[in-house]
Length: 320
Image 1 (cartoon, rainbow, N blue to C red):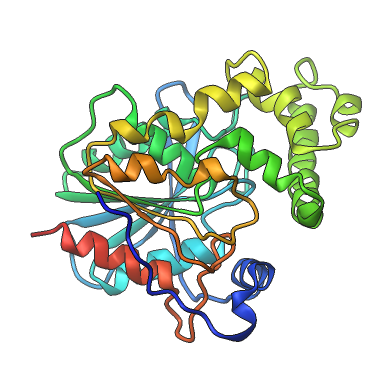
Image 2 (cartoon, rainbow, N blue to C red):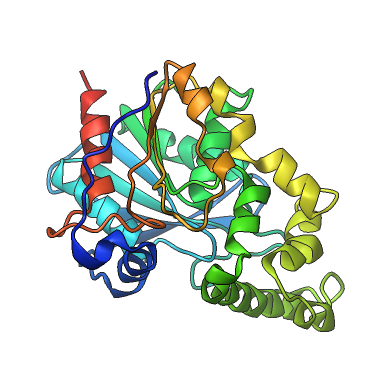
């Protein structure tokens, strides 16, 4: 599939990666109301799903996946759900384990390769016997999880017609290296603080598994992945986690039309996060690399952002 040209041309300050990233993530306001559903999955844990339904009775559904330290309440999740609602699709936003207001039941939580949890959510929505066509959209870490799910050797429901990823760290180790650069210090520190706070709460529930002193000694995202993320989820260490869970291992095996939008000025991404060769040789990977947009920051003058228009158009084209 030839690489896609991009029509995203922001004006003024939004040509700056930091301005677009921060504005879209922290200052954007999207009015949207959810209805929450809690499902119990096969291992006995729970996942909270936030539903936003369109006004008519729809047989179309989009499942949304958030990023690291995110939730269904992030502006980019609201904006994407609303864009699909306006196209007469229902939307359900998946809160990864431990990412809604309540800590999940087990020591394990979520990570960039937790594709089995997505599979359980898909099985649940299909059990409702309502939705005939399903689209999947993942942001950042959620995009990596999504691409892994799509390319794994597993059976996938025929109702899945397409997928999209936005600002996806296809190379987890490379992306971590990018985030750890000094110019991203504020971002990486915010992630670190958020995740350490979360781990301290988890340590209170599982004191035999987590030591608060070891949590306090973590000084980077990699330290956190080394201490908790990798070992809690069956990986040998952080390096093994990055190597096994990276989406770049699975892209070539994706069998449904998939749109991947990664801005060239996204300071969170490394060169390995732009899979040009895979896209050139795949009939299903549609890779768009706008010059601007930062990290999930495709700001426009309207209430709908560029990636929201592109993704809803892409999914609509697959309905025929």
